[in-house]
Image (tube, rainbow, N blue to C red; front, side, top):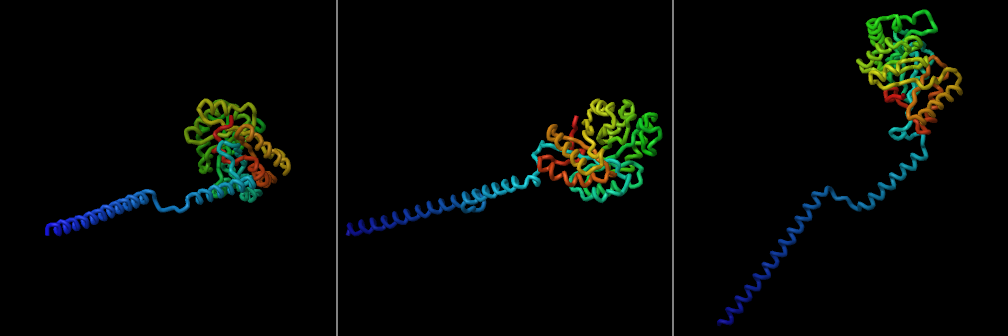
Length: 302
């Protein structure tokens, strides 16, 4: 009898050991699955075959690079590359070629004559097209004894009179981000006059471009005194109003930018060939790595 109970007890102990073993294994499996699910949850959504995806991305990037090399005219030059700003003077003087300038897609800076017949309308037009506007400030010239008219700065004016004229001119062209001189062979050589004009610009967050109508201009000297970036005209692109000649001058402007990093040129709205020459030469210079920018985007070229 005793051996029967011993055997029966041993049998139940054996069953219990098997049950405990199964429970232990089940618990281990559950813990492993929970840990795996937690890890996947922290890694974001499942991404099959990452090696293939990476290879595909590299292939697409290489394809884009090849396309850019094959279409240089569509490339933007690298940061710090050659930059050209073209200013179009005498806006408001005539209407004849305004339509051609409207077709020009590169950034241009239009310089508007104050109190001119079409000045307000043309400033609003080009501003609405996303172009930059500045004031084309009439200044006393040695070549003429007569005054330009309302809006001109004269060496005979007091500082207060100069400031009053500047205010009136800028009210006429409220879109202006800066100004450049119209003529001014006398006024730009007068230190007092230029200090008054440039200090006014500095106080009203405006820049000044020296059109450089005379080599005796003191504008850069005064700009240095007040800590204003010195912007100076490098090249008149349309002194000769002939299509091929204007294109040659634009190429020279681009060459100067490639040499010095930046270049500023001035053209005129009343010239018959200027707008078309710019339209034709823009893609040529862009293919050479030259970027067209607004005058305000030139930090200074002297």
